[in-house]
Image 1 (cartoon, one colour):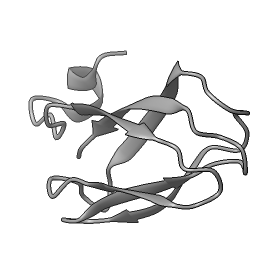
Image 2: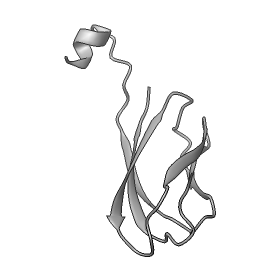
Image 3: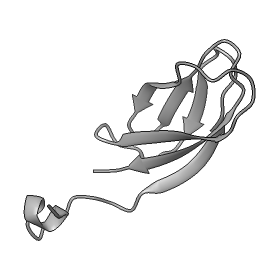
Image 4: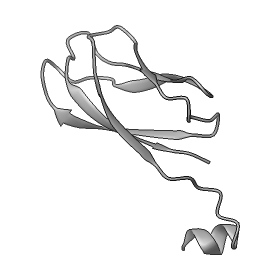
Length: 86
């Protein structure tokens, strides 16, 4: 099913944004992005493994500000992210 089949001609999706973020053990890492909305979806995947990857999650998402991630206690890996905005 395509987006036009779901939303008709009024496709609400905006261009996705991409970036990288480095985990900092169990400390939350902020990612500034003023284009993020309350309905944004953040997808994260591993780019470069260092330390022990475990439990990576988006822990906050604040419209107009950005989001933050947190990971396992020994994770210092680099992750790619993509923000889908609606």
